[in-house]
Amino acid sequence: MERIGAVLHQQLVCYRLQLRVLSTSLFDGLLAVFFPLMFATAALLVYRIKGDPEAMQYAGLGAAIMGMWTCQGVIASSLLTRERWAGTLELLVAAPTPLSRVLVPITMALSTIGLYCVVATILWERWVFGLRLEIASWPLFVLSVLMAALTLALFGFFLSVTAVRYRTSWSLGAALEYPGWLLCGFLVPVELLPDWIHPLSWSIPTTWAMAAVRESANGGSPWADLARCAAIGLAYAVLASYLGRRLVDSARRNATLALT
Amino acid sequence: MSAVQAVDLKRTFRTRTGLLRRTAKDVEAVRGVSFRIEPGELFGLLGPNGAGKTTTIKMLITLLLPTGGSASVLGHDVVDDVREVRRRIGYVFGGDRGLYERLSAYDNLRYFSELYGVAPREQKARIGELLELVGLTGRERERVEGYSRGMRQRLHIARGLLHDPAVLFLDEPSIGIDPVGARELRATIGLLKEQGKTVLLTTHYMFEADELCDRIAVIRSGEIVAEGTPTELKQRVPGGRVLEVETYGVPEATVASVGEVGGVRSVAMEERGQQQVLILQCEPDAEVTQGVLARLGGVRVGRVVSREPTLEDAYVELVTRA
Ligand SMILES: Nc1ncnc2c1ncn2[C@@H]1O[C@H](COP(=O)(O)OP(=O)(O)O)[C@@H](O)[C@H]1O
Ligand SMILES: [Mg+2]
Image (cartoon, rainbow over all chains, first blue to last red; front, top):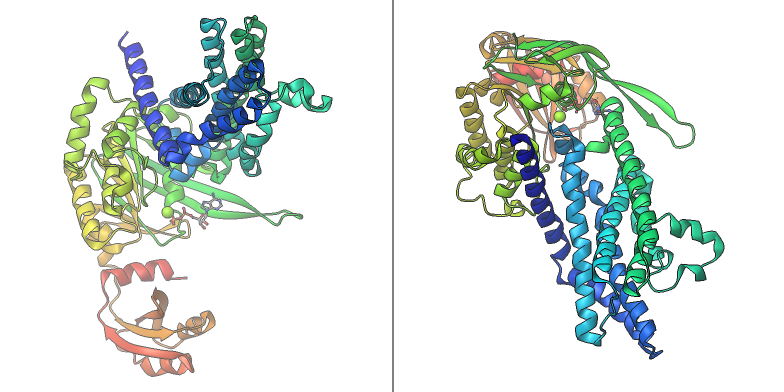
């Protein structure tokens, strides 16, 4: 019982401190706070020309998840690289706590940042554009947004592991930022993209999360999309933890500079 | 049981160069190092850059697998009992990395207390105690960003001590710290010894090892070339004189040829800003100045000083001797 208490305490404290690390580095410039809001503004200005409330709803939902994608995704995919530059990665690995328990609170902190982006964008859309999103089912909508944040954290985490393992792929996370706007169907439906791109879209959990968010807002059933999103997110988590363990082993054996 | 024991420890690195035709080259960083550290002892591993100090420590703290030999900490093998070893050791390296810049010192310590398994209800007292020990009480709420190098280093030590490890590994903790900061740091390390901690300290400063350590092993090119108490090592200083020659832009080949002058035992070069100072260990009564200046030929020469050998010279001779 005491052990469980200690583990919970550990996870909670680590979550709060990691959130502090992430949010101070993200929000240090005021600009960063407004970043997602700028994208939302641009998107809504373009869509407003149509004067169609359905289109505004489409863009409003898309912009919210797009803000999450941009902020949370970028931080997540450079996570380990930053820990490595700070020289803390080696200490995390050398700690007697299993690495997975170090990483869970970090993932949660990342998701929290993503949720902030969604909430900030929705409020901005309401205050500045008077856009009231029609949400058919709030519980399902919230669930879909939570799923979006969690799976994006896992996906970003996967990218960050590969970034440390294969140096050249460090830019992959950054390179995905803008194509992601198209790939995940934030502002343009995925179906409009060329067929050969579809598999790429489907392999990103955020595409399914976006679909689930739209379904739950528009009164449809998000469950199928949520299930796919969860499955793909989980696949990335498993892959990331496998690669992570390989990374640490290889660092011990081959003294790759991965940890320092 | 020894606190730390290394038996014929070896580590080879394979480095690859070339993009197209990759050629592998083996670097023997540590070649058969053996030593024992008894509980409560402060043991110094002294050697120049690249001697293999960090590599040795990384093997002992389980971050690197040895390619030969074996080692144990408090009876636990560093390859097989990783968790047991990690629970019992603290690790502090020099330099200003390894902290969360955006967090306060207090939050840094709280984070690592959780990861190093300090019981929640003991954390507060423990952190307070350690801040006191390293002299950071009152500054703990400030972000590490604003800390000086010396403060960071002391915070590092506090971090390494959080889980009250029995054995502490300090890898060049004084690197890059100003003399005052370095003195405070030595005082802190002295306190650890009084508390009965076993400490393995690496350094390339002779006086630091001399002041702090119970026993010193001098490591050079991955091998231990001398071991003993500071007093024992001092007795190894051969009688003789030291000639220091300030030069500007002296070529490697010339340095080597200076070493061949009769009466010169060894020659070492030290960069001091624009100058390269040649430090020659000479036979007691040899008159070498003329011979040396002749060899230097057209090289610009500054002051030439002859003096008694110091402890540092003994160390320099140990690590430069071919
Ligand atoms: N990861 C590595 N890959 C290849 N060579 C390495 C690596 N780490 C250290 N070395 C080499 O091993 C030797 C010993 O290095 P190190 O243990 O860091 O020395 P010290 O800490 O005494 O300065 C050096 O020649 C260094 O270049
Ligand atoms: Mg070193």
